[in-house]
Length: 250
Ligand code: MF3
Ligand code: CO
Image (cartoon, rainbow, N blue to C red):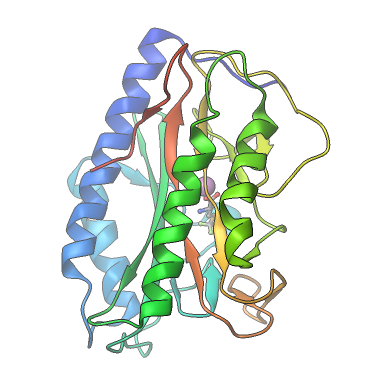
C-alpha cells in the first residue's frame, strides 16, 4: 500500500485528534504517582478519551484488552493494565495511547518517572526524547524516510543503549497503522521520499542494556531480554515543506 498524503481537511481533523490526545496525556502525567495501579491509569485514560467524545483506538485492536498500554520499568511496550500492578516510587512507566476523532487517529507515548527516580533512568528518558527530536530534524518534504531512522540511530549511538528493532513507527491517518514502517535504527537504503501532507508516528523505544526483547505469555507485553529499563517517546507529526508540525505536543 502507498503512503497517504492528507488533504487540508484531513490535516485539520488530524490536528484536532492529536490535540485531544495531548490533553489526555497532560492529565495522565499529573495523575501518575506511587500507589496507583496500572489499571487505574487505563480507567482514567479511557474516561478522558471518551470525555472528549472520542474512541480509544487501542481497545480491542487485534484483541488488545485496554485503552492505554502501560509498561513499567523493563516492560518496553504493550503492557496490559492490571489491578494488582501498583506503581512504586522509583519506577518508570511508559504510557502509549491513541484515539479516533471523526474517523482520524492520533497516537503518542511518553515515559514518566514515578516519584523520585534514579539518575540513570532520568538520562534514559531524556535521551530517548532527544532521539525523537534529532530524528524529526530530517522529517521534511524532499528528504527520505530513512534519513529519520538514521538520525535516531546516530543520536542514541554515543550512549551504547539498545535500540528496539522488532517494533517501529508508522504512518497514521484514517487507520492507526498505515504505511510506511519507520525503523529507529540505521538503514542501508534511503527509503521512500517524504511529501508534505504525510502524517507519521515516530516512536523510538530505547533500552539501557541490550536491544533484544521478548514477548510474555500474555502475547502482548514486550520486555527487555536482559531486564534492563526501557523508555518510549512518540508523537504524531505532519510533514511540511519546512519543519515538521508535531501534532501531539502539550
Ligand atoms: N502503540 C502502538 C503503536 O504505537 C499500537 C498499540 S496497539 C495495541 O503503534 F493493541 F497494543 F494497543
Ligand atoms: Co504508534
